[in-house]
Image (tube, rainbow, N blue to C red; front, side):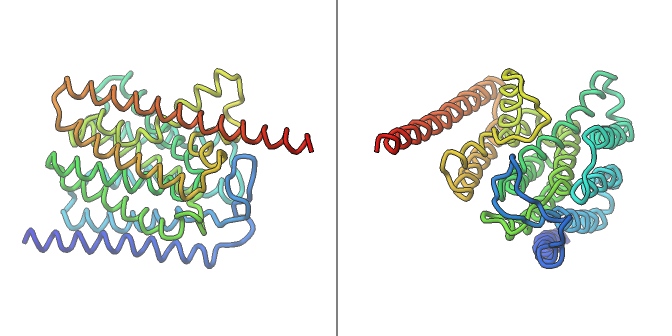
Length: 348
């Protein structure tokens, strides 16, 4: 019986990948009307209009695959109906924003309401006290917006989902939470199918309907998995640290520079790599390498004693500081070269 279930699960994961790939192709083929195109702006790294509703294919594959797994396990992932119902308003307002534009305050209100509904719908979460409840809601909304901020390079957000939820699936399986591991695998496979058309040079973007929905799913699944003991908060933080560190450090730097943080920009580290001369493909491959290292580091963290966990965290902190310094060196070298060329041209 067990091998048969595993075979069915494998077929579901393959189907999720295929549905996402076919769905993405259909969006590329049939959804290239004006309002569905992402036109270059001051934040963009692309130079021509690109369809941006690929997130619909990801969500379709995830919802179908996850629902089938719940039926297969007879309700194993019990929070999935609540998760999908709370995800619905986030998806709707994000699609609305992709097609016509929604004010920041309206989006934030709906995002916060969806996160609050998810938290207040779960009685065990309410037992942690009001301070923890507020933190849970803020965490979900923060992850949603971090995914939105980081979705500015072909293959980056989808790649983070594949690597991140692939890692969470391993951690959940080792902890005995096979149902949650299967759910994480479905989400990873759904983004894997989308990556067929989104890997640089991408033919399609996931849009806010994809990035906001993935951020909401990340926040809710990470929160739930941590509270039920499928993996530790530290391991989850390491897994998604490529997004967390880039977003938080960039936000702090912009605040210190007294910049308007709600205005589009190109100062994330992944954007700075491309602006410094790396191709989008090279930049995203370097990010993938970092994500894989973080996944392995999270596994070591989870299997280690407390003293070693502190050392692993310190090592990752030092590593990120070194990476930030290296990127600044690359930028400085490029700027010095550009200034030298300008001087040479002027001298002629």
